[in-house]
Amino acid sequence: MAVSLLSHDISDLCLGKPAIRSISISATVADALSVLTRIDEGCISVWRCGDHSSEADSDLHCRCVGKVCMVDIICFLCRQENLLQPAIALRSPISVLIPEGRELVRHLEPHASLMEAIDLIRDGVHNLVIPINMSASKRRNFLETATSNSISSLHNDRQYCWLAPEDIIRYLLNSIGLFSPTAASPINSVNIIETNNIFTVHYDDSALSILPLISQALIHQSSVAIVDLDDKLVGEISPFTLNFCDETLVAAIATLTAGELMAYIDCGGPPDDLVQLVKERLEEKNLEAVLEFVEEESSPISSSSSICSLSDDEFGCGSGRSWKIGGYSARVLRRSEAIVCHPWNSLVAVMIQALAHRVSYVWVIQEDGTLAGTVTFASMLAVFRDRLKSVG
Image (cartoon, rainbow, N blue to C red; front, top):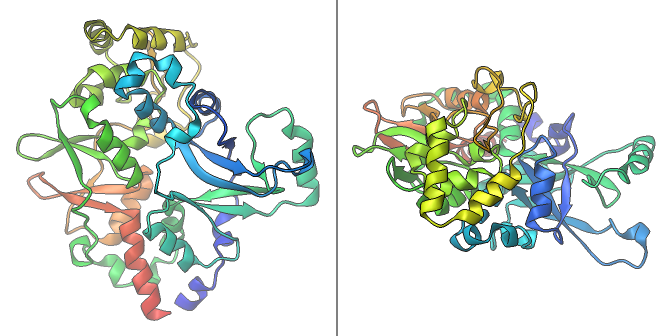
């Protein structure tokens, strides 16, 4: 059975996956922001294409060099120099949003093995870029309609899809019996509780001061824990949550504490008193440019429209209402309440928990609520890789 699992091509995991949307490396931050506000996705792929002699070859020999998410733009706009002139910051090249020295996306051919994919994710890759097979008629229909769509999804005469750690974990879960008894073992017995790269702040720390931690958490596909004076976990600021907020959140990050920001981005929408507090603090900090930017970006929406790209019920957000209070808007997929497990929980239970909440990590806490570490999809895959290697 294990041999059969290892014999599958990575393309088996791509069945039914949609083509990724893309933007050129020559675009600006404003261009990326415009695209992300028009699509129901938190990220968009960034591509670099070579120079060609003919227009027909302009999309050939292209490579995906990274991805840009809404949280990248929010963190960029929150830099001190950009808070003073957000309009100028938006004219920056999109390349400023792509981390240097880290290859977070990698191309992989459809015939690559499952083990190759797992190894890349263990090395820190977030997304694998896999070509999708297209029939001649489908390609022809796509080319006929592509001219009316500025968000390209065709490169090298092919479409591509993302494969993320979540996809591989879900795939392995379907064959979880192959990993017995490891899958049923407590997580503290299989050495997957990570104690390095744990990012924590206190409730009263300024939200602006934790931006470097948010950027690091995004790279490590984890989150920033908010703890009390006894190091007990009280909540989190998750890049995943920020990814589904809009750019007006910059004003809140620039003025609120970490605890206040948790309340601001929760599913019910920002309370009126926090919205007013944000305005007052912007004026106190002489950040009128941010206030003007926020008010310019805000526009009325109807009560029947939704700014959540996925259903609120699926993520526990309740009523499914959209909000626009005091000129600020946000679209959030889940609460600031952290998803937690205990050291004695089984590996398969933690897998299912992470998949159910659509997160790539789970916080590990002790019985008294103190933070013990995290379990990530990457650490889970390391265990499954060793198991597959031993039986393969």
